[in-house]
Amino acid sequence: MTGLPFLSVVIPCWNEAGFVAAFLDSVLANDYPPDRMEILLVDGMSDDGTREIVARYAEREPRLHLVDNPGHSKPVALNLGILEARGDVIIRLDVHAVYQNDYLRQCVQGLVAHPEADNVGGVRRAEPRDEKLLSRAISLANTHPWRPATRSTGSARPGPSGSTPSSAAATGGTSSTGSACSTSASTAPRTWSSTSGCGPPAGRSC
Image (cartoon, rainbow, N blue to C red; front, side, top):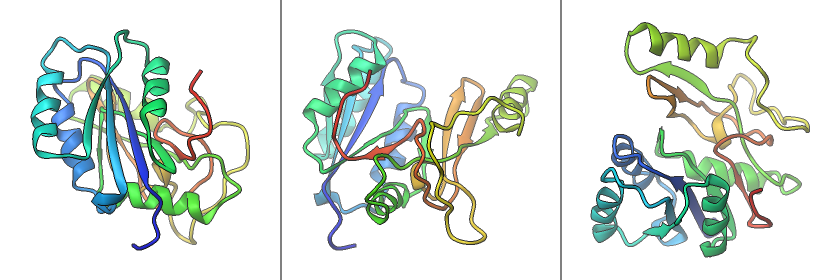
């Protein structure tokens, strides 16, 4: 894994005490070279214990930095993270998620493999957190082929033969789409935008 660019992981967050520990465990377990990345969790001054959880992780993990976002606005959080970022590549992740351990590397490698792309993203696969009716309904709504399209404009580039699309060119993760449902991704780089995207630090969120 030599030659990988320095990566900044930007995470907007507010009142995610129920999700942030599992999320951070999965991000910190990724196989991206530790000396080639930083993790910027931009918190909207959470008051539910999120900040205390993140602070405990940051005490033992020098890659993790807590950035204050005095408001709760997600676009402002992303802008603050981008301004703080030192990376050649920025990836945005969501706290309602659990990512497989090659997620970040697959994102960056997908972007590097397609230098004409501004962002690497993909498709989510929803999974219910339990067997309750609400959980199953949210999962179905997020995976049904007739659901509203979520891709940005532009063409998608197919992945390797026989593979399935991924979220931000990842090899799977589980990200929550609501209190009762989660989504997971599978392999194959794509070059359309998604909720978890990877790209060069060229601009701001609007």
